[in-house]
Image (cartoon, rainbow, N blue to C red):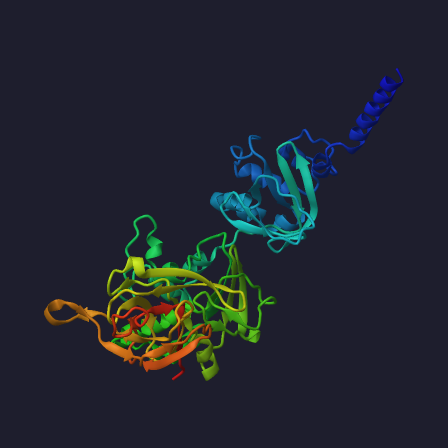
Length: 479
């Protein structure tokens, strides 16, 4: 009897405790609510300050989306902030629908104290960043108001639909820089092997294809637009580095491309947040004087800053633009002979604990065996070249050399051929050397696509004609 009484008392205590605690998530989401059984629309009808947006929402005819079968989060600009634009929105049904959908996200998204940025996909396809105190650049007046089919937040200002970067480039055709990038959808700079895409014709644009698809809402970009005078100055300053077959018009177009492609960064920075030095999407260094920014524009996937000053009107500006680049040894385009059983893609670790992968071809029995690398277009300037080549499994030093071949053209009887642009002396590959080694320098008088060949010793002896490469690094020089 005594044990039964103790059990009943314990059970009642647990029940009382659970009633007091309840469901912590339900308590959290229901904070401040008067009737959790109401729908979002019903809640907004009773929300002071939401009537203007609610009327726009109803006029936009989003009943199919907000039918209670899914959960949504609605970001509601208060009446005071939206009143001035309501009449204009009502006059354009397409703009009205886009505006309203830009304030509605699928699923429930609470405002919290986390420092993390959450990307929300809105009904119009735009992706907005939500932080602990704002969404986009707009702050919250009231937050985390629940209902039977989602949440709503009251905002201090409307979330005006923004263009993405590509929409901005194609719409703002007053700038020569934007005109040029748009023209690449139909104009080919050079024979780059880019095949026309039937599924996505815009990816035939060499800027979108090779630099980055700036249409993507989920990605973030910062794009600098040079006013026409500054753009023309930079194009002229870079022209000596892109001498394409001594053809003036083609060289100017390529110079425009190289100037424009290095004015975009894969991260969103407003003017105040711009760092002193940026790395462009093509790997160059970009230093921007904030005082040269005459206009800043927020996009749905980043920012645009308009500059009134040239960036390449001094040696330092050109030096910043001429970025070195690496060619990974384990990514060849072809071999002089097929030796799969003698070819090794190796995972290694340097003395600092950093992992890397290289290629080694060993005991292949071929004199002057070569590994070929099809490289990107090289500028018409001089280059220093370095390699890292790890000789870690042999007891002897071996030698290898580097050969640079020019652009392919029809030779005798139409057979494809390439001119030799540079041939380094045979260079020792010492034991256990993890350091980068200077190989030599060469000069190109024309902008062209080249091939690099890593060449083994002129011997068939095992251990003597080994070739190994972690990477090649090419450093263009200022003229």
